[in-house]
Amino acid sequence: MAHVENSNKKSCDICQRMNSVELATSRCIDCCDDLCEKCANCHHANRLSMEHRVLSLDDAETADCCSNMTFFCEKHADRKLEVYCFDHEQACCLMCATTEHRKCEKVENLEECAKQASDSNEVKKLRELLENLKGECTDDTANITKSKEKFHVQVNDVRSHIRSIKQSMVEFLNEKEAEFIEQLERVERDKNTQFVDKIGMLSDFQENLDNDIAKLKNPNDKNKMSLFLAMKEIQKNYKSLKENLGAVQSSYKSVDIKLEDDAILTKVLQEPKPFGELVVEETDTNSKTDYLNSTLVLESVLVKSGCRLTDVEAIRDDHVLAICDNHNLLDLFHINECHVASSKLSGKPWAMTKTGELSVAVTIRSPRSSIEFVDLAMDKSPFLTTTKILNLSFKPNGIACDNGTLIVSSTDGLLRHIDDNGTILHTVTVKKGYVYGLCLYSRRIIYSHHIENGKVYVLHDDKLGTQEFTFEHEHLSYPLGVSCDPDGNIYIVGCSTNNVLQMNMNGEFVRQILSKDKDKAIDNPMAVRVAVMGSRPRLLLTCQNEVRLYNFESCGSKSQTEEK
Image 1 (cartoon, rainbow, N blue to C red):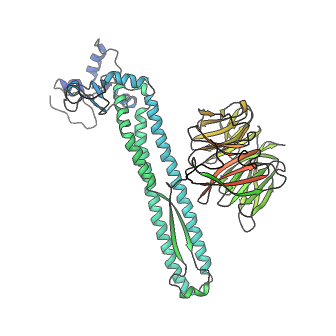
Image 2 (cartoon, rainbow, N blue to C red; image 1 turned 90 degrees about the horizontal axis):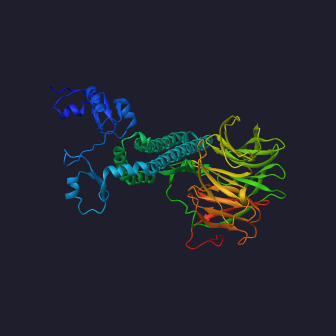
Image 3 (cartoon, one colour; image 1 turned 135 degrees about the horizontal axis):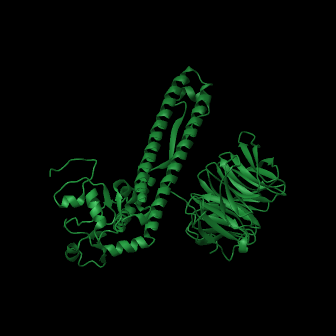
């Protein structure tokens, strides 16, 4: 029979072996053969294959995304793959095993390996590794996009400054302005092109990870041998995938732009560059603070008399917001000039979260349960303005913001995800009682609870609130504030133990980073926040009526404030 060319159809594998050509209509998942209708019927009737899973080609492709795997030896095309050499990470036939792999230490039966792998958690673990890597892509894309937006704002600021100078200049400066604006826009175009290129690289990389993750979904519906070989191929490539992502990550830098200008206008006419020098600064984002080994150095203390400060938040590079629940106040401080402004809130506050660069949401526990939204105006005379009050049917405690969605804790054992209109999007059930501190890092929800002398819980930010781990410590009692640094390390305030504990992102205790034993001022601490202000990471801590600002500084020896 003549061979029929059809690029969109598959031929029956059994017919091909008999020197015939028939179009396949189905596929045996267990044999990995494409079958025509006649061969499929025989396959069902054969005693040895009657229990095999025969699906339509479309269903088989959906059920087994690893179906393109070959089960025959590369060197001996007529021999099936029968063993797997773990030393060479390669499947082969028995002939290859006895010749090329006879000295290898671990050569095992392929079917047994496939069965053991499918019955274990290897598929799930490998899929989780890939999903975590995909999460890094998502986070990096968001960071680059944010850097691009920040850079665009800075470009607009420089452009505005240039134009304000222009108003006091003569016609000569108008000519120079056109040259300068052209240079600025050229720099912006070049940098925007770089941002788009990097995002495109991450998008391509993420698409490749999606393909690998898809191969590992629904393992019970797949041919075990196909799944095993796909797993081994993905595991073998995982390290290079990780290295490739690392190379992409290390290739981009955060960008800042500023204008270095001469303020003396009388000299402008004599200057070849009257608008100053355009400087684009790039900061290596991989030059990170070693938070787990840095020394905490006290920078300043901000004091508001008569207040008990229950939460704190960093605003821009040099301002701090703090909540006073004694007087129902939201206070604004400058890190050098101390108290700047206050705003009277509608009731007794507890916690807050940033909802924008210059806006926060504050939980109000009494006399009426609500969330109060406050905007900051950072002009010559900074002031705070309440823009909206959202009444609630439950008493709120902690609060965190996730891309416009608010996560709010309460005493009834629920974490509620709500929008800024108060609509409950979904809830996560936790232990009833006081959930005090609450923060969000990547896809994790971290909260502190008073139960059993105080614990910290870490959940996956999903609709089920899948618990990842629980942290407790003999030197932690009545935990209130919780916070994360940019690396995901967690900081917990012990109000009764008068200390701050640090643990890494895996939930392992690292050190007692602040304590009253070392510093008498650490008295009844309540709130902690780790934030990058400008280019400097800081730890903010409230103790009674104080906000204490600490810098993370690298050192070769242990800090005097830390205690293992």
